[in-house]
Length: 329
Image (tube, rainbow, N blue to C red; front, side, top):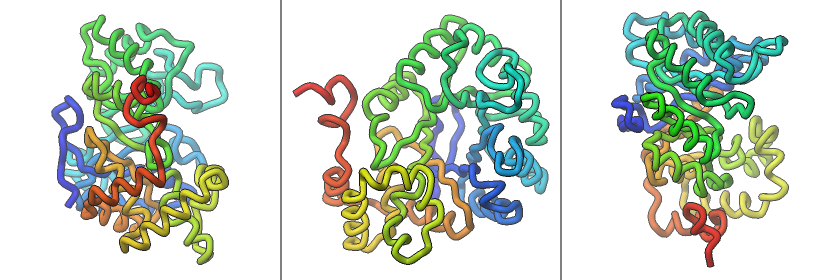
């Protein structure tokens, strides 16, 4: 069961898994996307994560439009869903159609609201740090949107630990709540966040959303699928580029999963779910079947022995744990 947990210090409660929508548009058609969203919400996955630029295979903004049509399909749906979107990536050809200027943040929010067909964004995330904009400008824009009721909470994505600390220091100087969440890439294969990002999130009371919890499908049985001729996403992009350097570890991982009688995708998600601080994996199913597989991970409780074996296969950075202790002999 996808029980609800506190989302950082916001007072919101969200499911242990969130719905990622990067595949909606180009890889998943609208009818299947709506079935995925229906099934996710029925199982307690009430946080839907998107971005203004998603859907670029059709056109930028398409995914928000698709979600907007789904939200309008039920009078209760908008109140039941925590809508999270992002701003900062390029949305047009103009020099100011990207980044975290006050101009683009406010313009981007208005455009996302129109596409989503709603009057507020529950979690408005900065898609990545913008070194060209000072925090005073960012928080002035975000505060304006919060005061207008167009944004409920502000989050970050792909920030370094020191970006989080700087952002919070600037926000508190203005008497603002600041960031409530950070969304980072984190998996058995991507353990760098354990050094500074996750400790910074804990220190500042941020919830943690995790994108690529299966490293783009590499931890979902990529080698087996390749042998069977069923590899799709795991045969391209992030997964394909990481496979040559990690082939031996992935092979050992799939063998381990077979020995314990569990699907690799379930094991990979279960590992993220077991981490301190209750991170929320953002899964990006292309089909209802993939959603069902992800939900099964909620029923997997890895034993201490199994967790130890996973640490052996995919060791942490340095000696493990946060910096600087990870580097101290």
